[in-house]
Image (cartoon, rainbow, N blue to C red; front, top):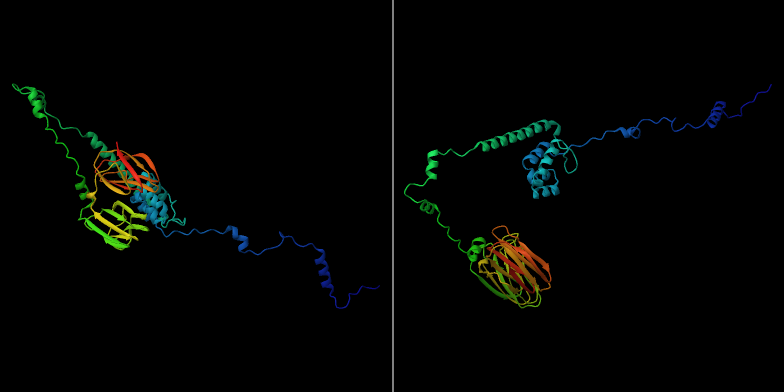
Length: 375
């Protein structure tokens, strides 16, 4: 009997294993064992929320006591909503109440949406203190209301009432009535516009300057505002700007024209700083007079170019027209609440606007003929 002999150099065991490996199917992905690692358990990792550096206690105190001014939102870095909250006085109180509730509920976060520090430790105390303030306020309001309801006028004796009701014998009732009438009140004196302007803006000695080209003119420090009567004969830019002590503009650009100019403007009315000097830019000859506001004339019905007037009338309707091509601006400044900017248009204009009661200062900026009529 002959037996099959393996070829020299070939291991029978290795040959069998190789045949089994070739014939057996490859294990599937489900049968393969994958050692545990970050990929296998990545879906089960827990996200740690970082706590804010902003304190819950400070945020709660700011929201409760200074919420009407938006301090809590400024503290959290939310500057935009903080400014809006300040300008609206916390939405007339509604926003203040909402923010207090949100802070106490733990929903308030900082600018990076991180929870406030110390909420879990101090929330119970904050709730208790807030509830105490609310309770005290309610009890105090009830006490004040009850005390005001119980107040009654002092009793008057019946004899005194009878004496007041019946006139004395022998004296006619008509004479008593005449004697009891109060004296007529004196008529109110008419308002002196000049005195009012001196009290409001201050006064000083008039300054007269003239020259050519660029220059700097000092402004009197005795008053907060004044008139500038200017003229220019150059052909280029003619600019008068008001500067403060640090040579920065106060926002009062009185004149900005090209070529010849003649008009009256006022500085210090809506300025951002205290006036110190006038910066004059010109390529020709110019004259500038600086006078107190009280030197302005009474309101005129028509004119040309820039002008300033004093108004002492009652509240009225102001009808205005303008035939120029550039800006037409009419402003009013008074002690009491005034309309401020009455007209701000470009080119020709015709319309009617409300005018507050005087005394007041009315300024006109125009490049053409205009008219102002009160009704």
